[in-house]
Image (cartoon, rainbow, N blue to C red):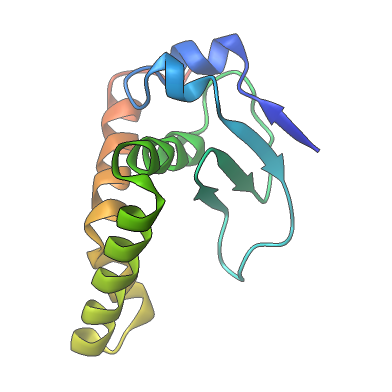
Length: 125
């Protein structure tokens, strides 16, 4: 079963994704993710291995919301084309899945957005 973002989450992640896009997001907890993967965004759906926080404190959710924004800005064809192309080119160059994944510009942008979100004090105890 999927859920929308709470109002608290929408407010917390506003620096990562605008309210209109956030309003279309659905979060689904699932074990059906590749090994070693904690989360994944597929258009407006965010798949999380553990959906433990609904207060807007989750850096992984901030990262995945950056991907939702990217999907909305680029569209599915451009997002997937760029993601796969950059991954395969880096994989051929580095011969390392991890290095290739970290070289994808969309991942770099999502990691940076989540780090900026965290540094701006959004994680509350």
